[in-house]
Length: 621
Image (cartoon, rainbow, N blue to C red):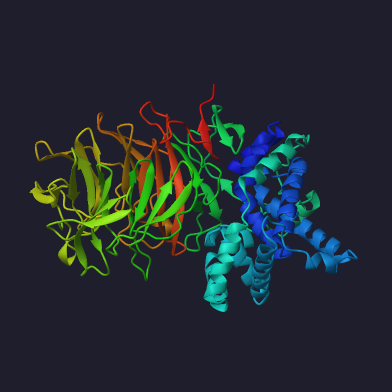
């Protein structure tokens, strides 16, 4: 069975060099960061990283196990770094070169001097740390890798990585850490890097060699017999970096993906591969499941669509709320362990850029937001513990970037959900005083700034999500009486009545939903009463058709996370932020979900044309 890497390698060896761009985009940041740790110069690191990928493509036919690509790439990187350091040390003019080692950039001589000072300070700060700390800092900040990815890359545990990161941060002054983060952000590789590699690959002729079936790459027959004599399995993983598909039947149907400026034919995968990330979980010895994260490579495609990584949100957080106005998404409020936020950040999917906006007057999380006539209404939530319930309503005008206080909601609550029908907002369920599960429904009229009590929802619950389709509101999932439920109930504001509908296949609390083309897409949540790790997070995407009262399955979320938020723009859904329970860190990750059959006739981007960015989907002819 092949991983996605193995499949792409096969495509390259079959005469499609453009497919190599997918592997470059997937691993360039981590390899570049690894090389920078060794060379300590951004310009040299970029040059050597380019050489690494070109050499990898040239020698691709020598890769005996296609699914070992990352481990093999790591070995090439280590070898070329050693050679570069030796050649630099052997040059008679090395002292002059070291003096002139800062990267050439446009600007004034004053600018050069200031940047040289910054790089010198950065190098001094990193030099003051042990190499194990330098590695995790660089891979984390420059490579854009999370704790689990750094651990797999270095062949250690996520716990060890968290400890090293924590100690490295403590060893650096806060200002130096901020400067390092900003400098690394400025020096990240651009999309054109992948284009250069693919253009070089097009001029290189490679041919596949006979595949080796019984032994891992690099092991001779004699070595295999020796291992067998010792009773050891020859199927060893190198640095724990290889991944094995445990279910991946591949169809022959293809579609065109645009990778940078280069269109690439890749398979449409009708079943979603599950990836084994570790040999065992330490308890039962079974394989844990890996969910591909933080890469520009599209996650495997199921019947429900594809996933694409987009630009991170500036402020990592969870339990915030998002709403979309005029093609832009506004992320509002939220929290981390020690901080409640009132920040507002605007995301433009057309440019893949985030912008800071005016802060919300109230600090809060577990709130809900809805849009009426281009204004966003932030409703309810918490400011601290469960004794600090809010009934606060504040209106945000994106055009003026201004907030206005409105009439409080009658029932203070958090973990509620709101939806809009005919210009009125319906606040449904949530937790009230004493953490009570609520069935309360209250209607808000923005024109009159008045609230009205409506018929209670049949099932009292919290952490549910509501979506409106054709004038009716669907309350989906949530937590009730200490358990996670799959209940779906339909509310008709015209009659003020509730109707039971077909349950969601997967019971879950903390679910969030968005509507595209008349269907409701349900993401995330958990079946566990207490969330202890990523394995408790539900990755399954389930799609509800209100017209048929039926559920179908979509493509799994790539990143397990608790309490993110999501909004729809141009027929695509953007899942943002959340809490990585396994690594105990708050996320800024943004992933774009393209539903099956997009673009729909009524779905048009804000500029009236499709975006032309990495990972863009085009229809094959």
